[in-house]
Length: 239
Image 1 (cartoon, one colour):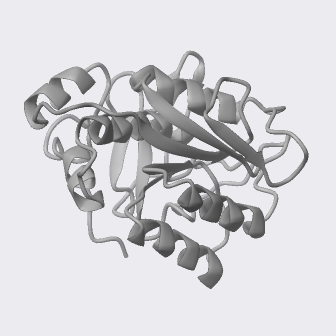
Image 2: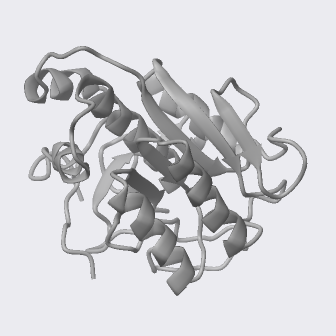
C-alpha cells in the first residue's frame, strides 16, 4: 500500500505555486526521460528498444513530450521507445531496459504511461532508479484500458511505493470520470489537452511541474520534490 495520499490541482497556477514555494537559485535544465511510443519532436537523446527508429507512429509519446515542454520549456528530453503503433507496451523487458538506460543518462525524472503486470524484476528496476535520486512519475491509469476492458485498479508501475501515481482532473477541477481514483493515487493534475483527456496527460503535466522544481533547485531530493508537488493537498479537488 502506498503511504502518501494527496491531490493537487495544477491548472494555470504553476507560476504562483513556484513563486510561493521555491527559493531563487541559478537555474539549470532538468533531464527528463519519457518511456513511451517515441517522439517526433526534438529531444536531447533517444533510443528505441522495440525497432530501429525513435520515430513515433502512435503519437502518444510526442504528445507527452510536448506537454512536458509546454510546462517547462528549458529541459533536456531523453526519449525511450518501448511502445509500438498500437500504443501497448511491447514487453516488460523493454521497459526494464528503458529504465536502466535512463539511469545511465543520469536523468532527474522518468515519465511512464504504461500498464504492466507486477513483477520482481520490474520493481527492482524502479527501486534502482529511485535509489539513484530519480523522481518517477506514472499515470495511475484510466478506467477503460487500451484493450477496452474496465478496471478500477491502479496500474503498475504507478502502484509501486517508489512511483508518484497521477490521476486526472477535468476542466472543472473534479476528478475526471475516466480516471482511476482512490487511496493509491498520490496526486491529481490537469488531465486534458484539447479534445484528449486521461491520466497520461495528467502525468505529463505533473512531470513538467517536477522538472520546474528541479530546474530551480537541482539539489532537491526525491522526497522534497514530492512534498512540493503535494503542497496543495488540502485545497482544490472538488468531488
